[in-house]
Every structure is written in C-alpha cells, then in structure tokens.
Length: 398
Image (cartoon, rainbow, N blue to C red; front, side):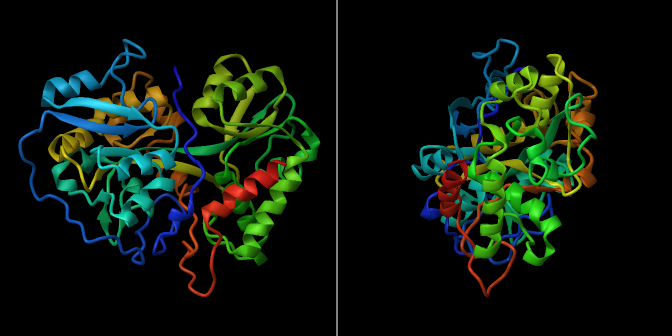
C-alpha cells in the first residue's frame, strides 16, 4: 500500500467566521438551519460535456498513473466522457478555499474544515444529487451531514471517511488501553514516548475527552468551545506536552517511531496502523470509549465552474463502485459507495475500515470549523474561533 495522505487541518484565518452555526457531533444527522448561504441553485439537467475539468484535490485522489502506473482512474474517465482532467494537489484546506475563490477550478475534494466556508461564502454551489446516479449507493451516514449540507440541501458528493484512532505498542503498554486517558492523565506512564497529531484541530481531541470526563464543562460539540471549555482543553494539552516525545504530521515518521520504540502510544489513522503492523511492529489501534474525531471529504462544485457538466461527470465517476474502491484502498480510508466493498482488491478492506458499520461512525465527531457563533446552537455565548486555536496550539507546543 502506498499512503498519500497529507495533513489537512491547517491554520484558519479570520475569514472563517461564518454567519451561522452548524452541528458537527457524530457522523450524520440533519444539517443546521442557521447557516444562510447565498441563494444559489443547482442545475436541473446536464448539457454537453465541455471537454475538460479543473480539479483541486488531496494527494492520492486524482491519480493518472504518473505516480504509479498501476494506479490510474483518470484516463478511464477521460476516455469515457471526453473531459480532460487538469488537477492541482492542495496541501491544506486553507489552500483549497483560496484556490476555489479564484474561479479557475470546477470542483474540489473539501474536508469538513473547508466545506462550510465554501458554502457560506458562496464559492460552492448546491448539487442536484439526481444528476449523480451513483449517489443513491452512498452510505446513509454520509448524506445530509453537518459538514456537507445546509437546510436539507447537499452541497457535494461524499468521497470517503476515516477516524483518528488510539494506537499502542501491545508489548510495552499494559493493560491494553480503552480510554484516551492513556495519553492525557496517564501519559506520564510512558513519558517521552507519547505521540500526538501536530495540528490545532487536535484541540478537539482533548475537548472530546473532556466532554466525557468532565460533565461540569457541558461540552456538547468538540468544535464548539466557549472560552472556559477551550481553556480547559488547552490546559489538558499543555499538561500532556510534558510527556509527548514527538508531535507527528508525517506518517512515515510515526511508523518509524513505533517500530523503533520511540513512540509507544498516541493518535493515528487506520492506514498508518495497518502499515506499521505490516512492517513488524506490535501495535493495535482502536476507537476509545469516549469516541474519536475524524474526517469526511466531499466533492463540491464551484459556483463559478466553467465546466459544470464535466464536473458532474467527475462527481459520478469518483463515487462509482470500482473507482471509489480504488481511491479508498490507495488513499487509506473507508469508501463512500456501499457497492465499493465488493470491488476492493483486499476483500477484508471494508471490514478493517468499518466502511458499512454506521454504529461505528456515530462515535466519530468529524472535523468542522470552529467559529464564534457556536456550532452546538448556543446563542448566549461566543465560541472560540479557529484562528485562536492556531495561536493556542503554538503555546501548547512551547
């Protein structure tokens, strides 16, 4: 397996202050009715393909064989549709938002920390899911999510999802952990050998843990923290910092650290856990009893798309069973299309990634963008916006 995942949670700016709230708890549920994006309309029918499509994507999402001759789902699309693919890899959600504002791109594979910004600013248009035939086979838990829909209208086609897990060395960490307390209150047991994800969005992991362990804080949503709640999460992470040996963003470094024993416990992704184990390290990974954070990506169409017909054809292609299976295995995430599980080369892939286990995903709080207007619906208090999360993360790491 080749992993191409790039850390996506990047520093947000003051422009993140959306004009409304949106719930992000769990993996599904109806979207907020508070967000009032511009009154854009989705097309009612498709016209003739324009001959090309310009995409912004995470590395590993738009593969044409140039990175690996055995990994190519672009040329098949071009041959079938006549739409030539031009793609740009983005290294962060901020970069995706900036690029979409130029109007030079037709579609983008946005994560939850970018999708609401694109909706609120009017840079992303609502989609007519009836024009994407393969949408009907997308897992229900990915439809009408807090991060990809507003007032019952989908603003994109789900691509895939993944969870942030707790990984540990089975020989050095005993008894086996069941709680995130292993990397917070109990982190000193493995002082210098604890690892954590290097991003401001990791503050949400601390908030998720406090939601379960400190009910007096009344945290409902790890991405909607008032000042008191935020300060508690930051304090917990500053305490943890004394025991952290390394903050990681490069998956190869985490694999190496667990193989050498420099790290014995910390956050990870399933694809990293699988790769680490395949290279001989004695590790296991799990969703602890408090639940976990995670991500879900959505292909969104630009409101200024010059090639909307080709863009819609791409949305349908990338979520078609065989292609979605190929992307999921190459990238390392659960596919969006339920029929993709029958198309994976590894017939155990969807089991390992919990692709069809909706009860599993209900325990995952997908990334969202913290804004001043609290995402949990509170009106009587302001929440801490992501720009403050970025500042705090610098202080936490010291």
